Image (cartoon, rainbow, N blue to C red; front, side, top):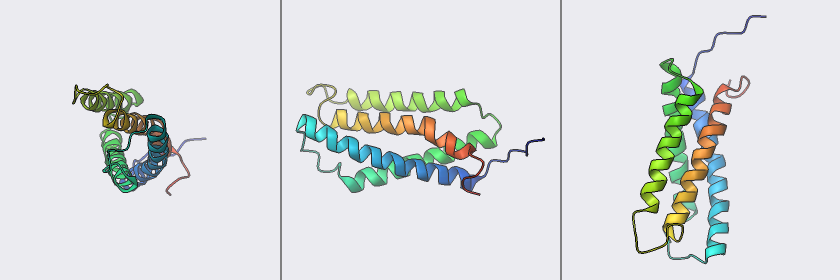
Length: 139
């Protein structure tokens, strides 16, 4: 049986990014609660539920659009996307971990933001391509 031709749709990429953002938001909020209970870290009032939700949703929706550009330009290979997301996640994590030398690397804002970046990067590498290529979702 001949498989149907594959045409990437912008709406499918956008919805995959938004759904990945919802999953990442839930995981990031759980991570924040666990991180704050283990480290007793409380001073970062700007990392609350709303800021985590908005930031994660915006970043992963934009990642869905970025993913669409890979698919549209026929340069869509799994290692291209994986390398791009890994490089961006490593750069962001390194920048946040080494921005203030007065604290240990994984304490305070550094550990909190590094966890957000790593968890969101893992979901962008795994869940976003799955949702984008799933044949029965977002029809």
